[in-house]
Image (cartoon, rainbow, N blue to C red; front, side, top):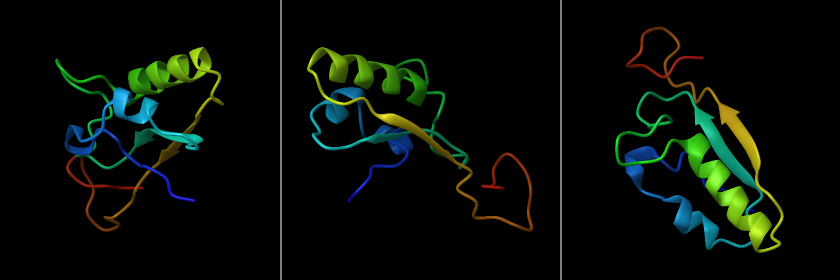
Length: 87
């Protein structure tokens, strides 16, 4: 089974895109990598808002809801800071 992670990475995927998907059961609400834009910006929804929007649409169309996932997405184990992906 395939799964879409960090939908706000470069703002590549919208809630509307995900609403069209059938069979996806998980939504990555949080990812610890510093470039995935978890909190959105002035014109893009946060991943938490997207998750809500998708689940509302799924409930309204009788699709099973998506369960939330989170990961630290660690890549850097010896350098620490906000620009690194730390555990």
